[in-house]
Picture 1 (cartoon, rainbow, N blue to C red):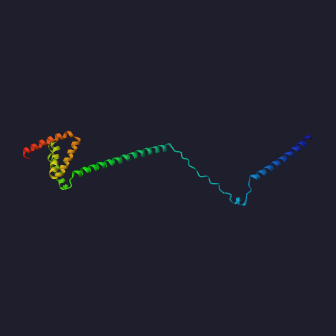
Picture 2 (cartoon, one colour):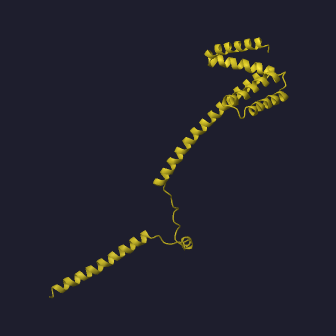
Picture 3 (tube, rainbow, N blue to C red):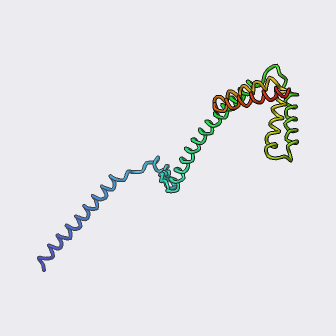
Length: 198
């Protein structure tokens, strides 16, 4: 046991010296890694935690958002097509109005006063419909038209001539076969009126 004691003593001395050296190395490392606080750094130490960085939003489209976007694009494209068609229809309508205005201006002579003559023609046409009120269907259809044409030829003769010329031009253009039949009927009617002395 005597030989064991010096070994134990040597080991304990070695362990103490080793632990002392280890402690010195740790303190030296700690001194190197931690800076010594200066007077300026001691004054500026924060009391509160540092502020969190601002949150960044990441766009993540939902299925509803995609469907709404698709519906909006569909409606917008159809609205644009409808808008173009409406503008084209308006332009076509304006063209028809200009054509009708040109035809009406071509029918109305500048030297004939329309104000009393048109009123007389309207009254005569209404008188024809009143006379044919309780008659058969042929008289109800024909008598106002006959009164209209007769009063137009009497009160507005130049307008009647121009309307007749335009009607004949349309007849030759669209119903050329009817022109000959109408000419024969007009000839027969004038012959009958000539024989009757009218």
